[in-house]
Image (cartoon, rainbow, N blue to C red):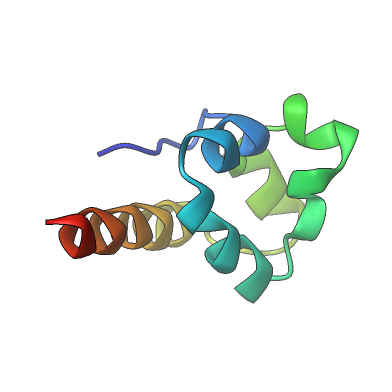
Amino acid sequence: MAVTKDMTISDCVELYPETIEVFVKHGLSCFGCAVSRLENIEQGAALHGIDPDKLVAELNSAIEKEAASQD
């Protein structure tokens, strides 16, 4: 698993830009703001009423799809 709930949103997006679509889909466009450097994925999900485990699963799925398309 590449992404975990305790990873900051900005670290996730910087390491895995393919996750941006998942964040946007869930209304989490905060990856571009200063708070994203301090707020982890679990906190961001909670503030937006999103199940953090499901969000992390979707983020990891996006990463896996990108990796598969590179093969």
